[in-house]
Figure 1 (tube, helix red, strand yellow):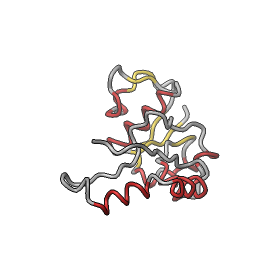
Figure 2 (cartoon, rainbow, N blue to C red):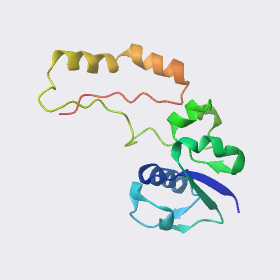
Figure 3 (tube, rainbow, N blue to C red):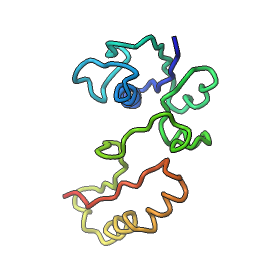
Figure 4 (cartoon, helix red, strand yellow):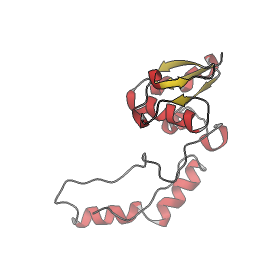
Length: 145
């Protein structure tokens, strides 16, 4: 009978449902992946769901029992996901890392090379760690080919 708010857009709702399934709160149809929808839930375990625009989910916390909130919206709402969340997505293998992408042919532009180096620097990692207190996890890596 508990109500959980989830984002109503396809990408974020699928991601939210995957998080709930990974934590055994629901069961999803085999193979739905991040395209999961509420209709793909095979066992709601008695839960009810309220679909809301992702940016409004934090404001709904007083009206629901729980909510799946995107990190950027949680931080904007003065929540600290690393401390306030009951569960978090795993960082390892997470497909939602932000990436630097450039138009084909600009990969070797010195300005792009400098930006890539700066974005992967210890100073940027320290800034992220200090500012977001574990709520944003730096995901540095080698440039893709």
